[in-house]
Image 1 (cartoon, rainbow, N blue to C red):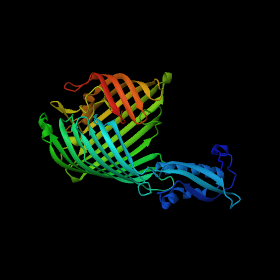
Image 2: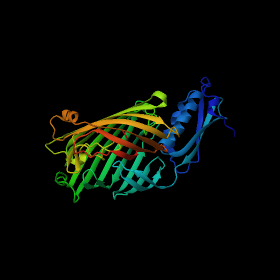
Image 3: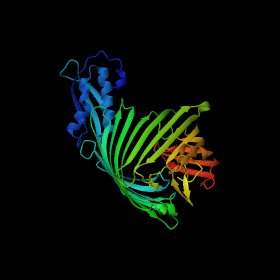
Image 4: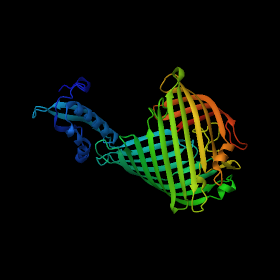
Length: 431
């Protein structure tokens, strides 16, 4: 049977009336029939051949995005039953029985770690997935995480629920302490307004133990021990960037808030706003600007725990300072703060290869206000931190961003843990 590319007739067959006779999926073994009906039944509403071609492509793409298939290609054939009848065939490849892999990556706290992942995608034939990840960093941190995710199927429906459980152990170098935690989260994601707005809701519970070390200062040692945290988080995101790791154009707007206090020890409201914008500039360069503002208010006369405080500093935001070192300090440790803002201006010059390696110049600035401060805005204006630098940025397989910069702090406060010279960062959440 010979098939031709849809481009041959697409946008030329709007006047061709269409009756969809049937839909056939090939390569199906474990995928459930009800899942396929939910995903493809909209095709029967196609009124002409152009619309059928378009909808078949949309359907095939969505079948892959929700995790039912790893590959899906639609083919359209004429039906022998009807004069204007057509049959849609989907050549499909189902998910593998099991996924097992390993990788070396950089955690958000700056530690390099190695991880092993074991998972099963669409294990019940309706796109459900389960993953277990065991990771260990080269500095001693380790974690065991379990994630269950279920897409809510339907035509162009981007909606899913899931459960996340974990038992991480982290070395918090900025606090001169260790953290042992058992946590669980129930989450819900959905896209609104023609998939332009991403919504996320999470209900979190965590049992945390802050462990003092021999060099832990007293203000941090005073907050050591067990705490129970129960919180609700929501986020709203509009992401129009062409590439999240290093965009050449587009804008990101994200607002999130977290409320804790109905149960457990901490009681606070945290609000955070993220803005990023990128655009082509002179001589083939890319100009990018970013901003993040965080404000935390404690309730019920409870002191804000340092694990919930705002921190700045390090290769991911204000370069030229040690990791999460900006804020109220006690000896060689940091206690964070109650309000923080950071902004940056970047210019990138593509090198070779042009889509992966960039010359990177930047100017970063920000500050952190004390938790007990009565005038947080004034505190931040009185003690801004500013740094500048030049370096190289490399995007590896569109999955991780690597930076090596020579950084000079040009404005800081006595006692700050500055880092003049080369600074390396690897991850995916850079400002």
